[in-house]
Length: 206
Image (cartoon, rainbow, N blue to C red; front, side, top):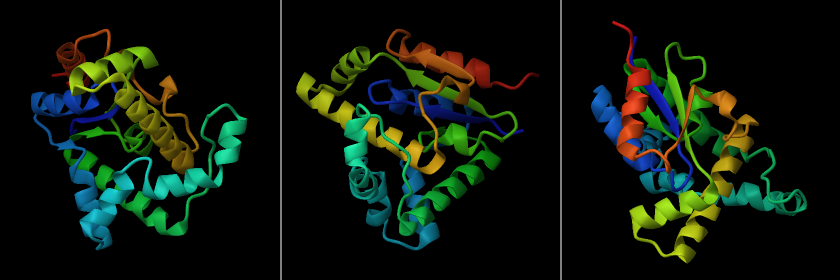
């Protein structure tokens, strides 16, 4: 049975560090930046177009979110489920197909609602890196060399867009711990230790 790990990692939790190191430790490919490349090939569209879908919360997501912005404000900023345009459904379907094909061979997959898309894959481990907003900000500033204003701007945009993505396509809350086997506060636990913990949980019994 191939090793499959999905990682949900909000801004400032170190997913872009943990993911590649974990994949190397487990001896499987890491999927993040390669996903839009494969999506562009499958849909026969320019890579720039596929990448634009990844530029959260710009392009497609900003269009969807704008259509229910008054409702977002009314309900305290929590993104609500909404039906996206049909031309973006092909992008979502292609992304899901890339994730499922990767799972067949084994991979560490960052984002793209992997825990939901691959929830029925036998033996897959679904992980959430999370922390309080303030600690995510501090870690983002430390890791990225950002000032607080920039980190807050990036965090706010990323959080809203990522939640909108999951709620729009899957009618789910990405922060709900029931989607995951393991939830780690990666601002309290060193990222290298996070890799060790996830690798231990992902290893198959001898």
